[in-house]
Length: 110
Length: 114
Image (cartoon, rainbow over all chains, first blue to last red; front, side, top):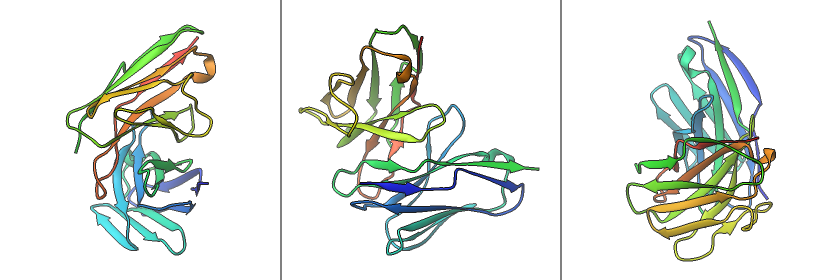
C-alpha cells in the first residue's frame, strides 16, 4: 500500500522561510514530486527528486532521503502569492503513476 | 513539456446522467492517467488509460462507473456514469512523458451534480 503524510496546514510570514515535510511508505519508489495548487486551479509542478540530496530551483528547494522515506520542500523569501496547497507525491515504480499526500495548505501572512 | 487540453472545463449535471471528459495532448505520450480531487481533498488516481487495451483501475474504481477510452497516443476520455452528488469533484488528466520528466496536469474539469 501507499502511505504519504504531510501536515495539513501551516502559516508563515511574508519574507520568511518555511519547510514542509513529507514522509512516505510505499511499495515501490521511482521519484518524489512536489506540486503547488492554488484554489480552483490544477496542480503545477515544482520539483522532482529521485536521488538523495537537495535540489534547488530559485526560491524553492526540495530534499530527499530514500532510506528515511522523507522529503521536504523549502520555500525561501515567502511572498503572499505562495499561499497555496503543496502536494507531495510519490511515483510508483513500474506503473509510473503518482500517489499523493493529503497536501499542506500554506497561508502566508504579512 | 506536453501541453494538455481538457474539456469541458466545468459542468453542472443532473443526477443519473453521464458526462464524458476529453483529454488531448499535443504530443504522443506513453502513459495517461485520470485523477479525481474531491472538495478539500488531495488527488486520487482513478485509472491508467492504456492505448489499445482496457484501462487499469485503482481500488475503489470500476469500469462500469468510470469507463475510459484511449484510441491513440494523444487522446483519452473519461466518462462519469450515472452521476450522483458524491461524484462532484475535479477530474484531472495527467501524462507521463519519461523517467526524468515530471507528470503534468490538464486544467481539470469541475463537475457538480445536482
